[in-house]
Image: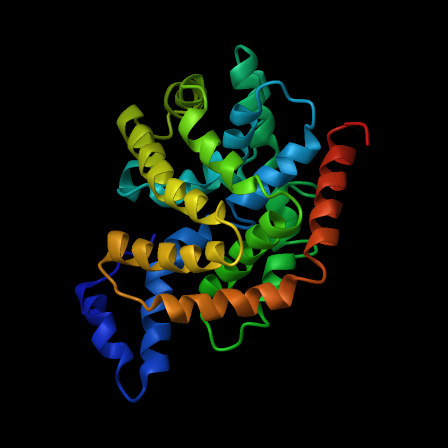
Amino acid sequence: MTRVPRIYHRAEECMKGKNGFSFIVLILVPVFFNLSQGLAFNSGTHLYIADHVFEDEPNPLDLYYGAIAPDLDFAVKQLSKWPTVFDDTHHNFVDLRSFASGPEQMAFAKGWLTHNEKDPWGIDHYAHIDPGYVIQKAKGLTGLPSDFAHLAIEVAVDVLLRDNEDHQLGGKLLSSLQRHSSKDRTLLTDLFVTNQQRTDRLTLIMAEMNYRQVMVQYARALSKPSPENKEALAKWGTMLAQRLYGVRLSSDYLLGILEDAIELCKDDYKATVDAVIQGIKDNIGLPE
């Protein structure tokens, strides 16, 4: 994972220069690379899809948390402590249902099941490989680093789902982050620390805690009514850059990018998400 050198920390001054746009691009690459490399669709979309794949789940908060938890990979601060974290949580698919004990862990495992790049049905497979919705849409945000453009598309789909399909989406995300069962972490520990010995317990706990802290702020922003949610998400982006990397970015600039991304996705995001939901149901043997 990329670390931001000190040379980038005077971002605000760089933006005021004559060649401000090129400086902004230079700054954005390291700021958002860690986050975007761990995402294909964003957390709201992952939650929405899991909610519609497993519609009758009696433990929805654990289902929701399982659907988003693989993205904790970006919150591992010492990569040397868990060098395979992205592969472990995304590429190397593990069906946690065989490790789960009790209804809460089983719900978490169901959510985790939906979030991977498994061909042909994992959510991230649809987003980045076939048909590669996020990749294709990001090409429309010209002049931006590809990783940052991907993240803008992912957030845009979250906003569209919240505004048009499920006004409670942000609230569900916030509740899952704050109120899921502690047994969910035990399941991850059993797998990645005890069974596979990929990392140590402290590294996993700290990564999950850091992930939840960042995403709670995101969920609070997403849960606001439109257009306040878009403004809040732009401010979240500035907060993330400042908090994680000491870089100051303009929220107006980020808001403009988000609005452009929403315009690109508004006409076909729902058909894509519906196709993902049906594809997962078909491939894991669930009824329509």
